[in-house]
Image 1 (cartoon, rainbow, N blue to C red):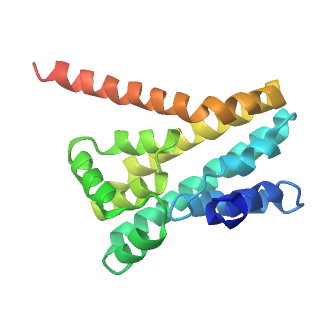
Image 2: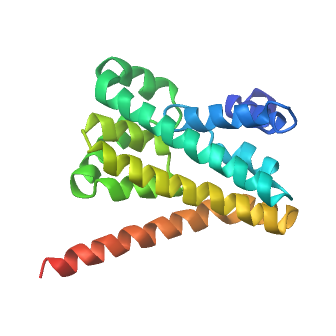
Length: 203
């Protein structure tokens, strides 16, 4: 399908165009907030072009991204805790990647893992919004949820920002090609460590 007729591609291109606006920082905050609760495209799309070449600016953008994303995660938690009964059909139908099958599987994982899953979703390319809403639906304690979100989201965005500011355009190409894979591998190793600790403590 041509990119011009693909709604997600058009949204992606629109996000890239925001980097040229004076209001780019405000848009970065809004998109980071929205992505944590319902928006389909991660804010890295806008964060990456904003961070190129200037460390002070990159750290500022990473901070904006992190704070707004955690606030959006709290909004997603509230959706799950207080509005899920009336909103779940809308999410399953209209939010890309948010399917009933995935959500049911996630509820089973939560019974076993809890907050480490929030950390994994916050750092990796796994859709973070599914985990924020599931945390509210399943009544995960709020403080561990916020802590896991803050650490993982900050680690993700500050890592991207610092690499881009230090190494510039060549690093942008590497991140475009490999970041999702590296982030997912890191998250798998993290969960593997928790699993090993749990198994060892059971003996």
